[in-house]
Amino acid sequence: MSKTNWKTRAVTAAVMTGLMGFSAHAQDESSKEEKHEMKQGKAVGEAAAKRVQYVGKLAVFNNRQIKLARLAEQQATDPQVKEFATKLREDHEKSQESLRTWAQQKKMEVSALTDTNITSEDQMGTGGSGVQQGYQEKMKGSGEKLGKAFDKTNEEINKLQAKQGPEFDKAFLSRIAEDQKKGKDILEEGRKEYKNDATFLALLSDTERTVRGNETEAKSLEKQIKKQ
Image (cartoon, rainbow, N blue to C red; front, side, top):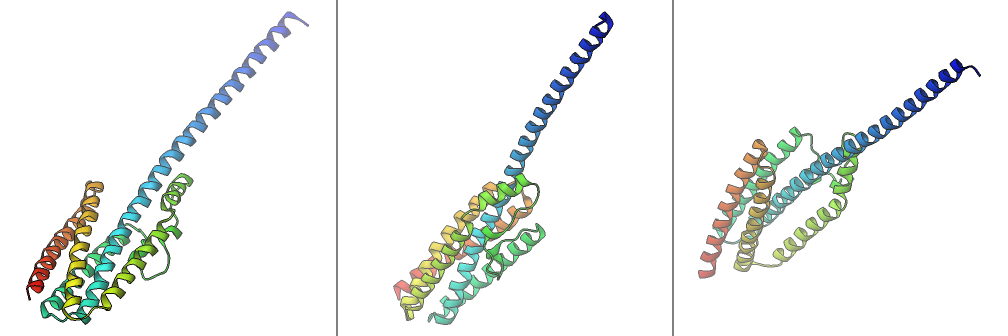
């Protein structure tokens, strides 16, 4: 082997080794980037699922108040209670419609806002694989929770239906006062979590003012009826 050929082969080997090392480094960097993108995608999916779950919780609250109010419109005996029930129903129907409109603008599907039997858990996230994975993992069990919430409302409506006269009126007002207090907690949670979303924050603030007013009125009426 000539001295020149030996040097040429040595240089070639060094170059090939360098290229292989560069390729391995590039693959490693690519892998790190993919993992980072996947992590970011999962975070986005989880945040989207958390918003869907929150909107669903608020929608369930509205649905519950509407159903209870409809029952009282039919079954209450005190005219003031009937009048309050109508106001309560209209308030929460308005709140529900505002929430539904907002969700549609965001292209967000929330089963509690629709008349379908699709649960939140059945819905799919959109975006890359990381987004879908994060969304689906966060949504696990949501459908079951939603079903339990509806079952609880139906059970309490059945219990109220069994009551008559002033007994029904008192039980209804007590139930609504307690529910509206829980509603305030749900709305306060949302205002803290989504304080940087001006449109959604305004919607929550409007609903909270209504809920506070209804809670006060329910307690006041309940005191009046107890004195009778």
